[in-house]
Structure formats: C-alpha cells, structure tokens
Length: 111
Figure 1 (tube, helix red, strand yellow):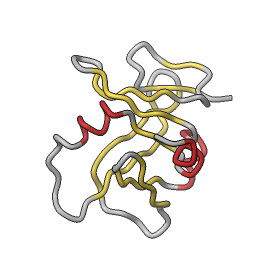
Figure 2 (tube, helix red, strand yellow; figure 1 turned 135 degrees about the vertical axis):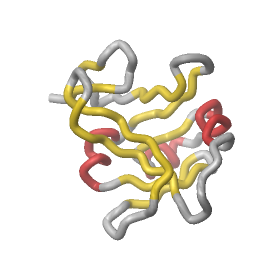
Figure 3 (cartoon, helix red, strand yellow; figure 1 turned 180 degrees about the vertical axis):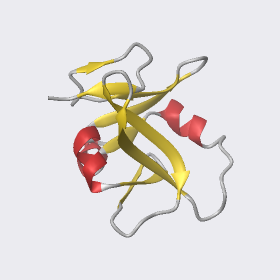
C-alpha cells in the first residue's frame, strides 16, 4: 500500500482483509459497501456487506478491492484500516476517529 493510496481512499485494506474478502461469494453487480449505522453498545456499528451501489455513494479502490461508502459514513471512518484476524474475530476496523469501542470491536463512538 502506497502513501498515495492512503490519502486518496478513506478506508484501506490489509493483505489479510483482501484475502478474506476474495473468499466471499456474492451476486454479480454487487459491490462491497462500508458503512456506519447507529446502535451497538457504544453508539455506532460498522456495516460491511455486498450491496447495490447507490447514486450518492463515493466509489474507491484500494489494494485491489473496489468499494463504496456513503458520504455520512465516510466522515466517521476516514483513515480506517480494515484487517482480518483469523478465528472468531474476523474483520477488525482500526479507526483513528474512534475514542472508544466495545470489547468485540464492532461498535465504536466518536466525540
């Protein structure tokens, strides 16, 4: 991953995350969506799913992974690195904007 890629994309992917994402089957035409929604034990939940692209989405590619993110979610996850930890943990978001998170790492809060 180059420095330019880090600056030009709000979310970056480790090699482990790329490898894990390549194992998922999804319908043709769907794209990886990274999002944030309200909930969880600390205020926000990360949302990672294959979905249809929407008119207002921003489109990015990093480390060979194409993804979309809506403008509101992008504010909360800008600078995040998505990693994959083998075993029960699965995908893990390293979010520099989070001031706190729950034990499972799926929920976070910001100021």
